[in-house]
Image 1 (tube, one colour):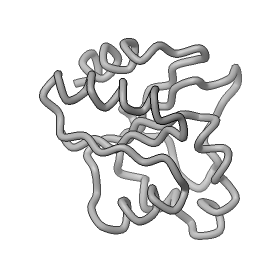
Image 2 (cartoon, one colour; image 1 turned 60 degrees about the vertical axis):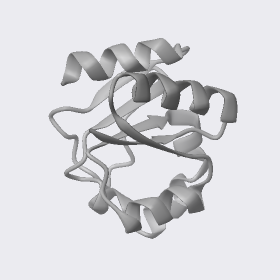
Image 3 (tube, helix red, strand yellow; image 1 turned 90 degrees about the vertical axis):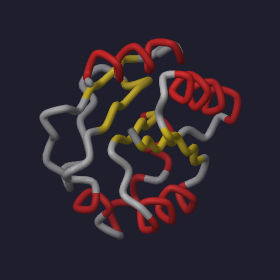
Amino acid sequence: MKILVVDEYSKRRAQIVEILEKNGHDVEGCSTTQDFMVKIDEDTPERLVLDVPTWRNGKAIYQYFQLGKKLEKIPILFYNSYEGFSFDGTRAPHENDRILHEPTKSEDIGTALEQAA
């Protein structure tokens, strides 16, 4: 499965990428809003793994460019989510979306993806 991981913290992003690659996935990591938007425009992943605080840092830009519409058909695993978290409203929830509340361990992300498959 082709997965795109979005997390501004390089150590955690690298751990998640490594775990998912060990599980046989084709994984790319992004640390910035610009990097994420470029990768989404280049190719559509089968799944997104998004750190909620990282997502919130770029939220205004994502809303401006209506990124939610491009993500409608992609299941997203949100992690490090706060209580009551919901997406920005520009994208309807996908039936295979998952939300992991903070603090999320890197290993939990691999487990959650394998359970969702």
